[in-house]
Length: 212
Image 1 (spheres, rainbow, N blue to C red):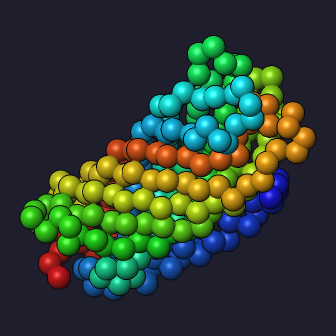
Image 2: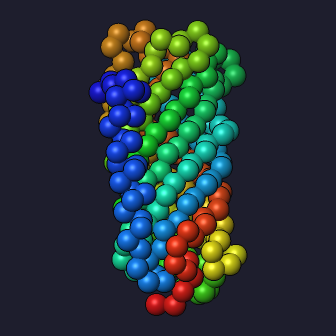
Image 3: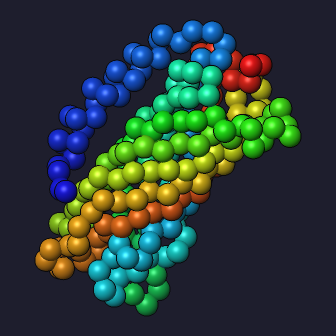
């Protein structure tokens, strides 16, 4: 499925505005609205490239920005944007790719697995989204886009009532078709992506580590 970036922006912008407005209904200390920023690395799966093209197994950077709202004690949602860049492996055709995505995800507080510490929490997240691929260099015309579904888990460590640092591991599965014609895939990507990031989560309302 291929749509223009302009159409994608038009579609998602109202959702983003609604999400921010919805946060104003936060009630009580355990209803928490959070902003998140994370930086890390990515690893694209090799089946997302046409023959002879292959990316490095570890690439920098991956940047994730998100807004998260816990509308129940254990259940919430977040809207997040991700930017990834990866490039060719040595001795393969030269290319660089910008991979951007936007996802709406459900969030579940799975802190039972970190119950050994009152400073640590775990959150599982999953939900649908849209991926936008833009090759650089000689293959700029081979843009593509497709739907995705993303899932992952975050481990947080509370620095204060308002701030925590976390590690996130996520997998982004792309719902895409083979490149047609094959030349449209030179230097581009239509597969799955694994990311590992480290970041900070800032509570904008309520208390992040309040008692149950």
